[in-house]
Length: 401
Image (cartoon, rainbow, N blue to C red; front, side, top):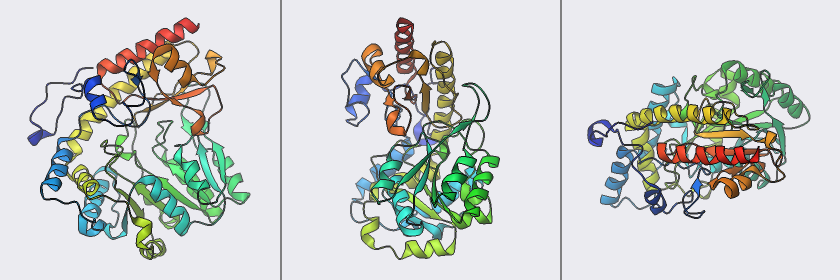
């Protein structure tokens, strides 16, 4: 799929999503394109290979021009709170209170602060596979995690994923008191349904537990609708802390700024008492980028979603032609979860693909998956690079067969 010729970014925000070459991407000097040799196509860490949203670049440049390099303002005085509230109401129908937003450096830090500040000193349920840092953020606080694998709502690789509500119920009954919810789900690309989320709420309420909801991928829903968990009911508002950021969807993880959103008075009071040291790390340029993304980044995001929608279908079509590999087509995010069990590998699939296809994916084991079976593929890349990567993988799989 080749993007149309770009029109002026100053009026539409449209960019040529195929503009950047491999050399351009390596010149960024960031993790994704710096780890591997030049003959490897990196489809691993969650960076996108698209030009940055012009409105975000302009906002960061303006901040630099006025030398906005000192200590940052809080969520309310910096404009982040109003910008995020406006985005959530327009996009997701949640009229969140700007006064209940706290700035944190990144989503992982926000999850950790929620565990420390309002959650019980007890084991934490993590539906698996899970975003890798969740395990560390739990363990670094001296807590145990309880893995509860996601389940299929039907038979076969095409069946939708679902939370294992009986499994979560059992874990909470055994003493766990917090559930970390990643929605939309990374790495499964699953959009949790209203039925799932309300079922989770019933389980959590029954045990007097809490939910920390990481909703960083909310702008990247490609099929269905994102439902903010805290907005579903009075019960979910009472037992939830939500953490979000523009960093993933607008591809600015190097500009530190995320938002922790409370949805009840007790939690807001608890976070208002945090010492300043707990919140250090938010950057002024990250603030500028987040405000611009939430206020004016919609056209760029719509264009990116259209491309990701096409790319997810290309990945699904390619995987369907690879004997021994299975995949449920993504409903959200740009991170595809591949099941390579049928290849019968005695090593991690990512290591095998790096050697045999010269394509770099993420290993499945750090996500809590069984060894030698799974890998995560990042398809937020240009049409030529994605086509070449899928071709290489297909050839390696064919040779294996």
